[in-house]
Length: 327
Image (cartoon, rainbow, N blue to C red; front, top):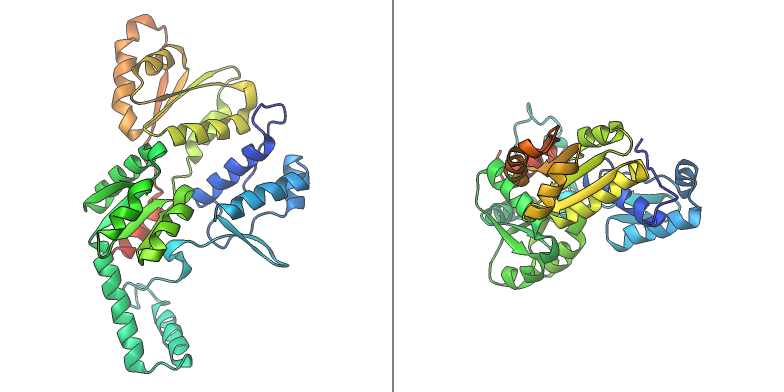
């Protein structure tokens, strides 16, 4: 069970701390689609927060499109994009033993709606053909204010999928999609609601990717000595903001957290000279490493540099390969 930590003496509102932690659990797939969130009573017992506060956070999550309330049942993580249905890529039953049942069930449902077998065949072929055409053009999107996340996703996807990836700011996505006949939009679950609202009217599919859960990094944060300096360097200002809130929720005022964008040489140099440990993403690694090497004569003990190799979870990459017909 995911544990949530609330620092009651913090300047950051408790509702903001809880909202960010639950959103992170959803984005990293610790709470996968269909997962039932803890009841307000359970969370109140775990966090010490009032149930009204927790209800407010759940409403915020529902307003962002991440969860949905089912009357008399609870709050569930919402399936998004093409997660709403099962995907069938191959008829090789030895490798996919449930494929036959899935196909049979789908055909039975179509026949129950009055379709003929020939019409069902046309529907299947049209859907497969559409998805293949969409896969010919893959677009990554993120808001302009946090285009760094988009750059992280695009870099990792180009390397993993070995296909061209186009990065389009969210604010320009509508105009871009109006100029193409088909395509696939990929984004983080943090931005899925806005991406779907833009893409759906244009009949363009959207696939959300799960971010890496950073479990090893979080474990290291939990083990850092009190009053340690911790540095965070990233290509993405959004990643820095959310990571700082999550670390604060875990350790409170025990750690002094310093953040810097990879483009901010002055702040990076300050972090290198003060921090005991530095976390960075892959695009920032070379810059931080060079700053550490340049400052070696001025510092007694170089900081421990930990590079998070991935932003997108490996399972999500593999699912995306199958969805795009690449593996």
